[in-house]
Length: 325
Ligand SMILES: Nc1nc2c(c(=O)[nH]1)N[C@H]1C(S)=C(S)[C@@H](COP(=O)(O)O)O[C@H]1N2
Ligand SMILES: [Mo]
Image (tube, rainbow, N blue to C red):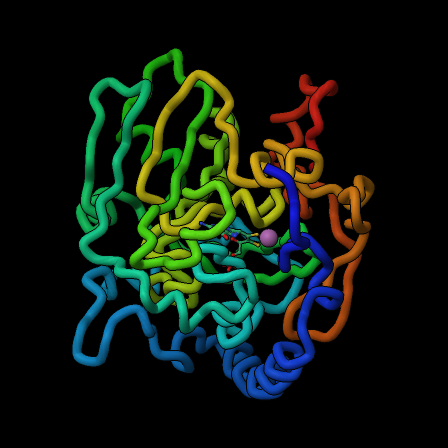
């Protein structure tokens, strides 16, 4: 598959944003200044209703949030206001612009079954709410760096992928975990288009069992908004954002390295590892700095997005690999 057209998220956001969108975003930024003040006061959840369920309907997982914060994960900057983070998304299943949050409301997140399969003692299918009951839910503040050079800081809730792996009981022969997003052109009409659907991502077993690797089921003290990839998505904060696959329906333990959505789409531009490194430019733009969403400022990007203490060891014997693209 080749890039016939240039796609929104492959180019730096300021270059890519049509003027209308840009204006829309500026008005959003104004609103968010007020929300920022209440975040400062420790109120995270109050401002935005969770649109995932219609009026009168209650998300069955609502009582799990806000979850107790795990204080081991600290950040060096303000949280991104929810009004910005939840309305400035990459979710190609709902279109190529950043303004997909209302289109994503078409996603139906219950019932939702996750299939755990491949090299496991016994394949299992589990309902999302049953899984949530088994897993230790906590809140973590993480930074997120998109390959397009914008970044945000979000209070995610969820559980370590390691906990799910312990429950899944993979065989010793499993070398990678392969994740797959839902595929349903009725729920996501954009999946009729050009791209190699469904969205697929992968991690080595060592990456998957790293302490940082989080299965995300909530954000801002509530169940995950659809625009964030409800009801369950991955977050690997030391990697570019595209590794953090949304709305997962399948988790498979495999021997071969999974071929990902973005490797298939742009083999010269996106690889399997995709670890953040400011010194290794994308073939079409620098990765040295990032626009911190909601602040109007740029900062220097850090190696492994600042998470080297957790993950640098994973890569020390892989010198021949393209680790940073
Ligand atoms: N299924 C799916 N997962 C996805 C994407 C996508 O288009 N589809 N976009 C990725 C990219 S490029 C980024 S930056 C993050 C965006 O997450 P956010 O919308 O919560 O900021 O989701 C990632 N996961
Ligand atoms: Mo991204």
